[in-house]
Length: 140
Image 1 (cartoon, helix red, strand yellow):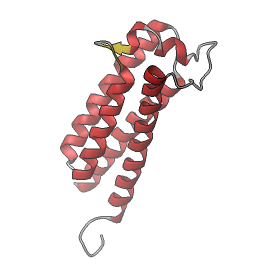
Image 2 (cartoon, rainbow, N blue to C red; image 1 turned 30 degrees about the horizontal axis):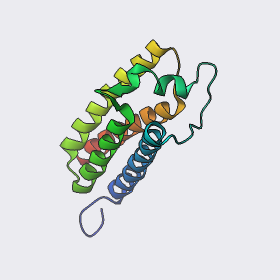
Image 3 (cartoon, one colour; image 1 turned 45 degrees about the horizontal axis):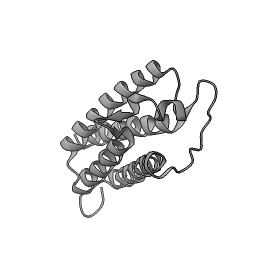
Image 4 (tube, rainbow, N blue to C red; image 1 turned 90 degrees about the horizontal axis):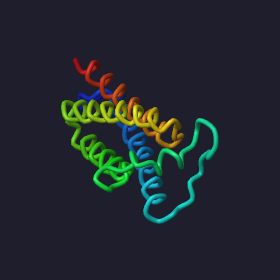
């Protein structure tokens, strides 16, 4: 513990959470730009890893909105929750994120291809959950 009574490790983990959530936001913005601005997709387009197949499938949209837009909302909300440091809200938001990841993995199964960028976002959401759980356990 330092003089202010907060654990330095907690600050380090929170900093990592900011960086990781920022990376998820950046990927979500990139995938949104692919949908709306025609930014080229840097990903394999053959074999099991085929981002275009996943991102152009009918499942890549919810109410006509690309799933990547919801990724932007998710990561902006995560950054806001990290800023206010509400551990309960962060945990609940991460659990919602994991539920969404499970759903999206099933969608990839239905499409028959894997999106490498989507997988990166899925891993980011899992890491954010693990870090928030670690911080909660350490505070007890």
